[in-house]
Length: 139
Image: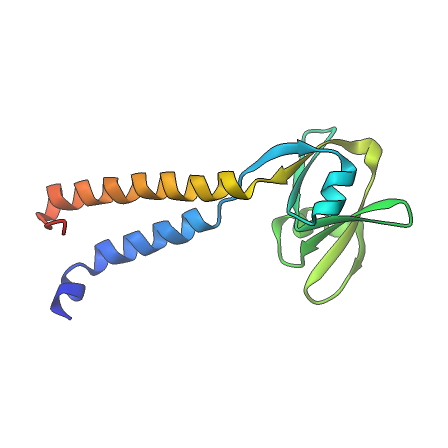
């Protein structure tokens, strides 16, 4: 217990860095409408005016492209005036295909690799700093 109290700042720093890294997603694959609809994965939509919105899912209903987001997300707040329909958890938006510049699908492989690489680099950096400042042994 004393060891935990002694290093509580280091532990809290590491935990906060892990939470920050876990929230990152890599949108790298540009896809067409059909692929985005069939996959059911997260999609980043870039509009002609260079604004971008992140949707949990994109699907087609009555020949219209519909974007689904969590009700409390940034995208929902940005597009609040344009809500097609909503419930307690989700908001649905009609996406005009003429205004869409590109769709980027989330890449789970790149996201996981970025967690590992960036996380390892951060942990190594924190460990080096901890040894230099506090003389904390690494074992």
